[in-house]
Image 1 (tube, rainbow, N blue to C red):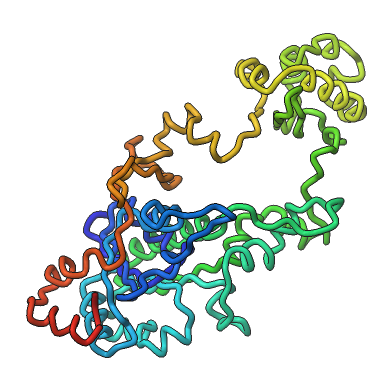
Image 2 (image 1 turned 60 degrees about the horizontal axis):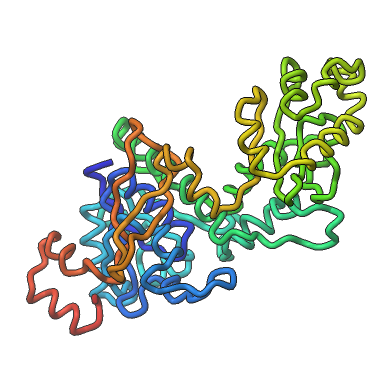
Length: 404
């Protein structure tokens, strides 16, 4: 996407994550921040109970790497004029501000299109840009996890309460990828037809797409799947599909959706070769009929050895399985590393490099090269000089507090 300029007037993670993806793909992303406080998320000093270093800030680095930051007070007429000048030379305008704020500060689609009719205008919202809750804000914890039904589906009924999301910016990151894809499609459409589109993605629609198979099932039957408690011993229909605990408290997930052709190999790898000749288990239909018995035998077998044994031993098994890992484990996972999923950027504090996760799309097997997230207003003067502003005007804008 080299040659594409994105003007981002957004904060937190949902929409800035889209800007990060576009920057990963080569776009020049200019992040507009308040000239005094910057992105509100810069002030977050705690994430899930963990203290955050403002110079090594996951909630800033993850959705803002690869960008340039310009400090503009969009509530001031002088700041709005600078914003319009940037919009004139941009391909995409990207925002997650509420409709009221966009209208009040004159960067709604009408004002931006007035200075650049060919700009793609992309909005991220909690619940969508239409309907009775158009003016209602939200985060991924409310719109993506709670309101959508995703949290309900992932909370075991036996728990007797509701699980919290557990991963900061979970829906935000997925939604940001959706926005980036929509923008790419809109750029292609503009190239082919000359028409500049408006692009909308909500956290609610992101959740429903992610859970689309279950949502469709629910609309069809009135019922959906729900997560099970960890003490549930195997599945009741397919014993080759479920989580099984190891002797040291680890978990191995078997995911052999269709056992046909895998029965003997699976039992042999689990140290249960005799079951492959047992008429109750040697073919698919009797295996399903006696699933509870097979699941109990599998549970006993996996429970007899430690996690690391199974992680090594099952590598030659034909059927699908996976070790139940933590997010920290993945940082040293040889497959993740081989596929360049972790990227190092220079740290703002000059210390050890900061590691970030690359987006899920990779082109030509090439590793991602990017830069750290900018400090607030770090590139104001450089960007405005590229725009053609002279030092005299830049100084006057600073004097009235329109830029930083």
